[in-house]
Image (cartoon, rainbow, N blue to C red; front, top):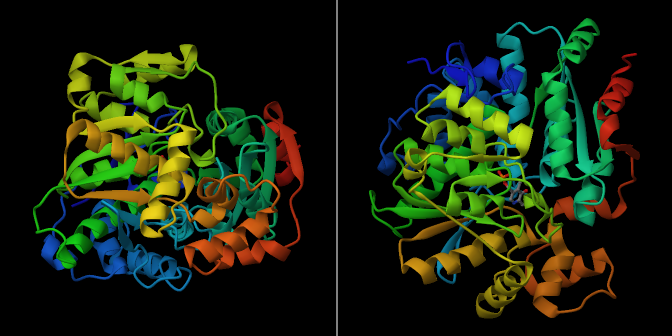
Length: 496
Ligand SMILES: *Cc1c(COP(=O)(O)O)cnc(C)c1O
């Protein structure tokens, strides 16, 4: 059965999955959503015996119905191969009282690899299916991890160029070094004077600008997005929640049908939304625990029903979650409004004009499966320290936000349902913050000395992604003001 997609902001027009992937964002500024949630059509018991790649096919075939079996399997098998440093792709590690789903075994050691290793294959397949002749320009805003994962995925992919904007002073040293050393003639990296929200707003503005899109088309280009607003990123992320549940059954940790909770360190709301989609497909997920850092706009939203981005922005030790406008929340808003595009439109208009919107009591009722909380910087550091002291297992700062919120959840609710925590980055990506949490003041050491110390304490070999940047030359030095993003793009593309 064909599954179609529509925009969260208009009721009528539907498009195919491949078209939605190509466009990234709908023309009306909305996000593409499936017109219904498909249900898993193989049993969990069968999924429990499958490889990651096989589970990926069973999940993705239900969402990307205009891809042939051959096309989809080609995309999956090209993405999830030896680029990952473990055959299982996404290992589950039990530590203390939770299961950590390690989503950082890809090339750039953050969970963004889970979707961005496959997106270029989905995108080029979609371009072929839709007879696109233009070169595709991937325009991306990053809070640190999407940028490198997207650059790695799209580097030297024929028919594409990729331009990444990151907050110049808002990413970790390893994150920045990873991006500015990126190889590939079709890659462009720009630091902006501003934060992630500025970068994301600037990118969305370019997507929506008719004049710019016309100029691009005349020059033989068209934009697409590698951000989590693209359904081509969301769908591959659903896979690992299905896989995690099946793995728990396979390992005898739970019985088929038993509920689990899922706890996700959240920024743009893409990763946790994928868990919500998995739940809607029939995976027995009970609570969706949404963990924020001190940029706790989502915690306040779940607590009050009001989304208010008018607040101070904090730069934290979990920079990939330093976000005040969580784009993917719009997909949830649309859903809890009863798939009401007019309501969604009204709230998003209010968000862009005033920075605030409030949902109705009926909509709040539909949020019962979510639990929101946040962790302070001290709490985040403490959980890294304590987990290491107790078990020897080292987690990164983002995962630690989720681990800290999990403790709060259990204290508040006494709920003992087995819980999977999305472990979104390797601690090596945030060596300074992680070693500070474990040892105290480490300010006398360089970033790479801290990497060496982390190798010693964690008993984990240094990931290739880190070894690479020790010596890689800087290739990208462009920095611009947040008002100059469009001019910078035009310069890269040779458009006057
Ligand atoms: C992107 C990112 C997050 C936030 O994920 P969203 O899908 O934006 O909510 C959390 N942790 C890490 C390490 C990330 O890179």
